[in-house]
Amino acid sequence: MSEAVETNKGGLLLGLVIGGAVGAITSLLIAPKAGSKLRKDLWSTYRTWQDKTKEIASTVCESSKNLADTVSQKTEDIVDTAKEKTENLVDTAKESQHRVTDSIQAAKTTFQNN
View 1 (cartoon, one colour):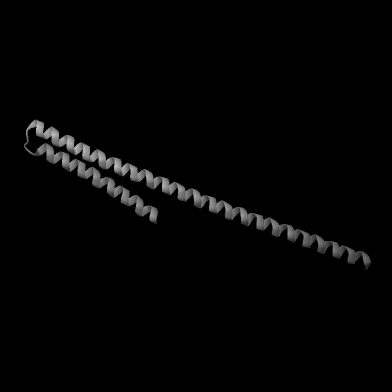
View 2: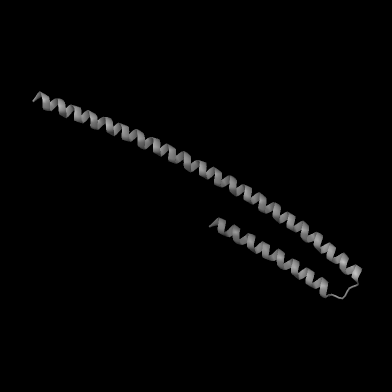
């Protein structure tokens, strides 16, 4: 469930960024300004959104690395647990085999003595 919440937060954040960029650009283009002032404002807005995009990309990258590390560790834990349980099952099966073999041998000896 946590992963779904994180995914929703990422989508919401991306939507806010895109919506903000579209709104900022639209307001700059609609507002009556001189060409040089408009270009300066557009350039400033572009730089601001570029910086924010880099921040978001960095955050997403870091979150992805953390998720990959967590998945890797959990997978290792599962493999170790499965390996341990398999070894226990093999040991139990061997013990059962020895008990059955001993019981058969005892029954065979008893049958031959009678």
